[in-house]
Structure formats: C-alpha cells, structure tokens
Length: 98
Figure (tube, rainbow, N blue to C red):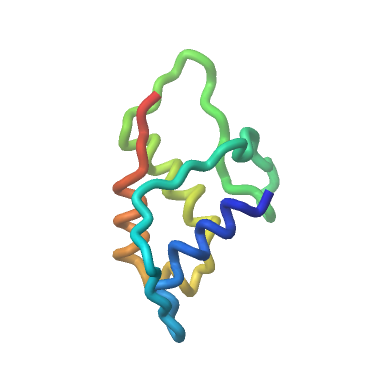
C-alpha cells in the first residue's frame, strides 16, 4: 500500500533541501501497480478531476495537464515551490498514450 510513497521518497533523497543524500545507484525505471482507479469527488480532499463523458478523447496536452494536477497533489506545496524545474521535468516525462 505504501510502496509508491517509499519509491517517491527514495527518488527525492538526492534533492532533499537540508540533507541531500546521493544514491549509490541510478534508478532507470519505476512501475506503479494497483494504483487508485477512482477519484474523490470532494473539494476539500479531492483532486478536482472529473471523468470525461464516454466517446470524448483528450489530446495529449489535455492528458498531461490532468496528470500534472494529480501529480502535484502528491507533493508538499513548499517542495513544489522550491523544485519547480524538477517537477516540470517529471511532468514532461509522463506518458500520455491510451
């Protein structure tokens, strides 16, 4: 259940603001399985994501924007503010096929 959180923390160790810790290896790939397949429709706790009606296809840019909003919810706002270029790079590497 918490494996994704562990991977996220591991990947961020080298850029920790007060105690950066280099990794003794290079992470080339990560694979998240059994991630949440539904959304929370609550303004206080939710992501603001609403499924699109059947038959409508999003462009790759629209898919990336949705992914960006959802990914941003996974990080501390202060971290995002201080690591905007790193976050931007992460967003650009999101696969948006299918």
